[in-house]
Amino acid sequence: MPTLIVTAHPDPDSLVQHLADRLVGALHAGTSELADLAAEGFDPRYTLGDRHTYRVAGEYTPDVAREQERLDRASDLVLVFPVYWWSMPALLKGWFDRVFVNGWAFGLDADGRIVRQLDRLRIHLVPVAGDDAGVYDRHGYEHAMRTQIEHGIVDFCGARRGVTAFVHDSEREDAEGREAAVEDAVNAVVAAIRA
Image 1: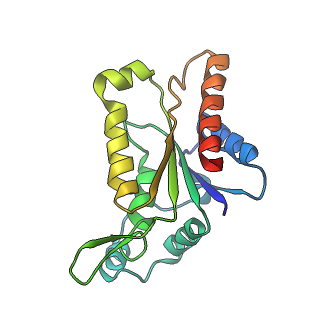
Image 2: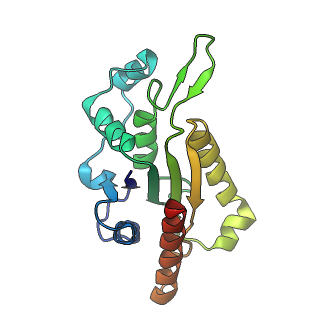
């Protein structure tokens, strides 16, 4: 099954987009699909319609149903995103809020217990961070992000954790060092997908 690569960056010339394009190339044509949420105009706003969808565990809006269909075709999901304020951008958070919902990503059994429904999916993270790894380590930012995303989303939905490959120092002037970090992240994700 193919890999779905999701990006959430408004600049088509960003390092995030470059990294996603490198992943598509490394995984070879036909085995990956790129979902550029910004370019596609995905609306991350959680509305009363989304609340209704959550409550009835179905009746998905057409845009949400399209995203779920893309995910249903994939065995691996790769999230490539910039780190904003030590977290994912609002666009990606809104995508999770609207798409990973009751009735599709999880449900409730007759006793009201959570049933995790995404065990078919393995999720990989490629956060692109402006600061260096030492800052993330000293302040616990990486741990906090991993807890939020890996435990709070991936584990909650029953998906499998893939690789998390940070690209630190993304705004440095050292183009060679930045490219080496991108190459390391691409290689780590591709190796995990092919394993």
